[in-house]
Image (cartoon, rainbow, N blue to C red; front, side):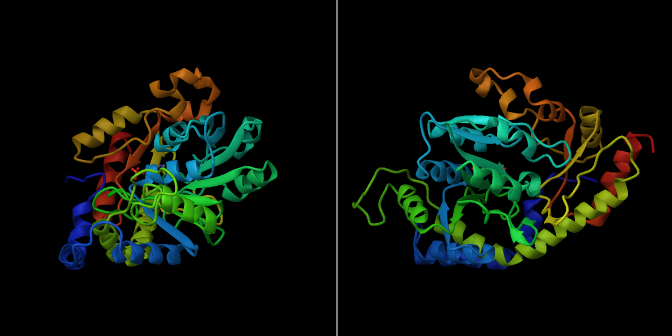
Length: 368
Ligand SMILES: *Cc1c(COP(=O)(O)O)cnc(C)c1O
């Protein structure tokens, strides 16, 4: 059996007619940037999350950069963010001119360790950029309280967490603004790069909309300089077709995770993901931990099972941040886990037979 880490083809085939129809509609309308397709998706995504504004942008990285920039964050400022994430969360802080301040992750949840947050706050701190890693809600209510009591902006990076919930509330609705990626492999994926910012703040929404479009709503009327980072109509039309399926696809991910967990619980050599109480973990990734990570990865590869590592190097340990002079020991959990974590195949259409095959290979590897 050959099992890819993510299978985008099987999902496309399941909605091929509507996708092809939507693409042709955009082509026939020759409406490629902006316009009704973008507006329609922005409105339906905002409604799905229960927020006032959704601003489509070029990708999830730009969504973070533009948000931080429009919050006025820049040179001399610090933004606090977890040590374990995709580089977008820290490189965007640097892009504004500010400095990323890393916090270690919680050993159980893999999201930012809220007990280590306060000590990282300085007189220069302007914001906390929380990340709902792997589809698991960070302790966003506690983080929100810390942000409020220290007068900091809270921004949520929801690139891996579409429809993730904390006590009945969607993540992406707790801070001043939140960012989403619709990269093809994300839980809601376009067929190219795409992203969005959501917010309930009217003034911030307007600034973000302007900045993402060369600083002007109307052509040649630039009220400021900006960037070119727009959601294009083809991607918007594709996302509008896919959005109504997201609840179903999310349930399928959750069911797949439950199958893995049920079948793997007696393998004492691996640690399985946990779900913090009162949260909905949307399992963008199903991440296990084992001291034999590299050997297991190679063994699974030989058995036709493709896996991933998210991420093989914690952010402060990357060469890109050598200028910050961090030692791995400052982030003991993130630094240890980078060698132990392994992401198993995860997508809504993964079948029980595929999961059973993967599990039996893992059990064979550990001599079960
Ligand atoms: C994917 C991702 C991003 C960036 O999204 P792009 O659309 O690829 O730019 C940001 N943060 C996290 C945590 C991500 O997983």
